Image (tube, rainbow, N blue to C red; front, side, top):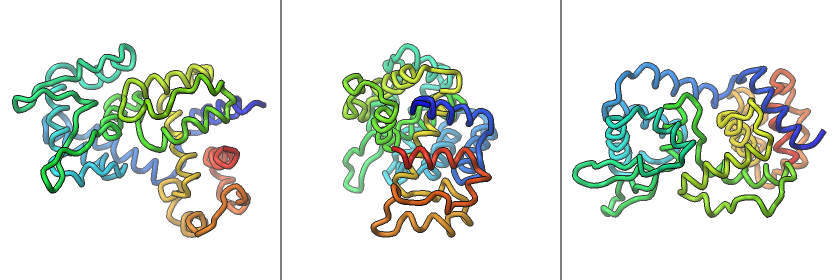
Length: 269
């Protein structure tokens, strides 16, 4: 079995077994409930959704002054033009970012490249691509790829693991704060893996995020609290070497075959 076959088997297992209990699943389901329960797309409703996503995904937008409010206003204005979910899904096909341009308070704002919020000194802060794509992910019912540091960190590792041509791999620097380059890179990876029906944006994100968290030793959202107390703390000890860790110590993985396969994948990477 090739490494690519192993990846496809894991993706297929996502479809067969569903999602196992963890902080990741709880957070995802909680945000889904909020999206489904808050009707309408007023600035206040969008702000409520953004605030929850920012909190549960630790995207740090809440630390900026007025950042969440400013982003909520832009999204609300866009919603007046066209249904947001339709706009995001269409973008995945045409890669047209100009349609996400609106005028707020007399100023032209471009959703994906705008700087949101200010610092204590009143200076402009940075972009909000990670939070925007997470909002799009839930707005489209998990049909939009999530941009974050873990995905960009794991992308070349997965590419190499599958033995894909190194010269054809997109440059990671080209993806930084560039939604078009990022989506094109994700689409290219899907194509190189054969693009089977199991390889959705959601399943690929789930694979990259979990293996990335494991390799970082950040298991709090992957394990239950009981599991973390017994096993997760060791991953944060000074000098811990995951490559030498015996996964059979984690006896609970027998009851969590999907998580077990992700730990094994991370170990091989």
